[in-house]
Picture: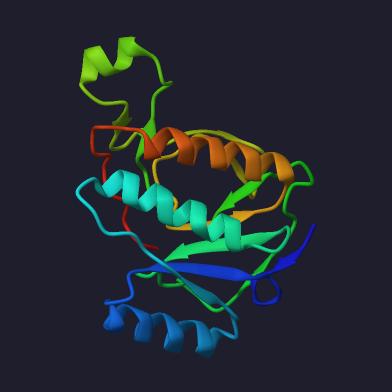
Length: 174
C-alpha cells in the first residue's frame, strides 16, 4: 500500500499559548503541503495525563481513517512524504524516531525497575527489508493511524496513560 502524507488529514496537538511552535508548524507543514488542524493541548499538574487527554481529543477530531497526529515540535527529516510498500496489515505507522520502549504492564517490571518505560528499549522485530514491527513504544509525537484496530489499540493506550500516576520518559521530536 502507498500513502502520501500530503493527502491525509493531520491534527497537531499544541497549547494555544505556544505561538512560536504554532508558527513553526504552520510554516513547516505549509512548505511541505500538509493540511492540518490544531488541537488544543491540556495544562495541569500531571503531564502524562494532559498529553493523553490532548491526544484523545485529536483522535476524536479525526473524521475517518487514515489520519495523523503530531505534537507541535515535530520536524520532518526530508521532503519525500510518500510511504511506499506499507504492509497491508499495518495498523499504526510510527513516523518519529525514539528508542524508548515499554515493558509489559505487569507489577513485576514496575517493582523491579521502578517504571515500565526505559531508554534504549525499542521492542521491535523485522517485518521485511524496509519495515519494522514495533511491539512497544512510549511516544506519540508523530503517528499515522491506518486501521480501526490501530485506532482502538491506541485509544486504549491513551486511557491507560491518562490514569497513570508516574511520569513517563520524554520522546525526542523527529
